[in-house]
Image 1 (cartoon, rainbow, N blue to C red):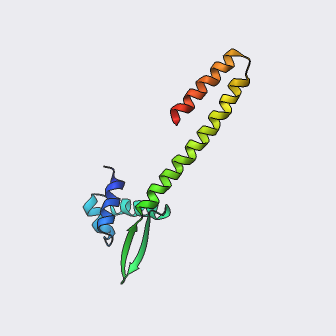
Image 2: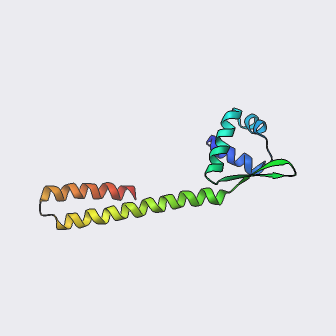
Image 3: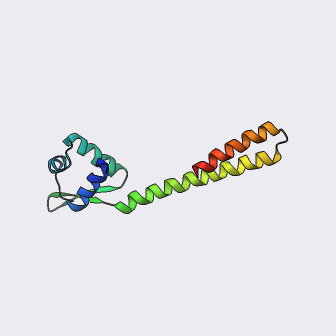
Length: 113
């Protein structure tokens, strides 16, 4: 399990944890904890609020999951578009060596889907 996953799991279970508590429990420096928290906030995975004068860190797992799914979907759509262009080129090509080259490219694109 990565440090980031452990960090998120700990935050979910302990939303009021201090930087010092996080660093001690997860065997990280306080600087590393602050950096991870900053990155999570910037990506929208974590939000920080004050509750009765105490910091509370909310982890939005759905945001993290949806961001990853959206990125994968966009990547797949781009590859499919490139693949269709390559296949059209292969069909229209008359030079056999260029057809083979297009076929190799198509196979590489298919491997990435």
